[in-house]
Length: 195
Ligand SMILES: Cc1cc2nc3c(=O)[nH]c(=O)nc-3n(C[C@H](O)[C@H](O)[C@H](O)COP(=O)(O)O)c2cc1C
Image (cartoon, rainbow, N blue to C red; front, side, top):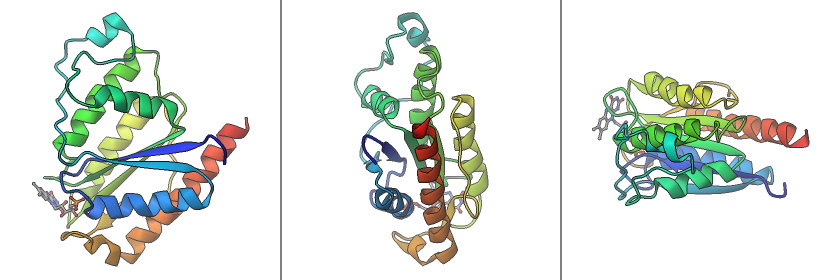
């Protein structure tokens, strides 16, 4: 589909790990559906947390005043995309600090600028070894919902089980959940674009 794009962020500090495998499975389906995709892995990057300065509410220029990381670039990537996928491994029953920093900063800038991501399609994807995947999934979905975004479902909650790098590929149901998510996301985006 022309000019339709989904951007996915991997909040794991481990590049090309389980979260990346899950995200790639969703993106593969989106590509099959003719949607352009981009995967951004935060591994190796420093992303500062929000300092609560509220400058974004004063400037309203779609930027965070912290300029020495890539968050402002990511705000624009999200703004120009039709769909946003946020993926994270589970760390002590929650998302990684990298993903939380991305959420806090992009979320605040978006709210300060008349809800930049309003009515875009959002999906959370989570890797977990054993437990804590659902609180992580829920927390990411709260970001989409308060951003006035629209969240498609899948055949299960979007959580894949694995520990060592690549192990999640053995979670057949988890991988199938990612495929169904990709199909539902593509369906929803096409409906919204048809309007
Ligand atoms: C600091 C840390 C905390 C973790 N906490 C949890 C946890 O609370 N529950 C769990 O099931 N797995 C936990 N894990 C395991 C990871 O969620 C799991 O290995 C995941 O597949 C890693 O995904 P990645 O390869 O994309 O980094 C933790 C791993 C690390 C490094």
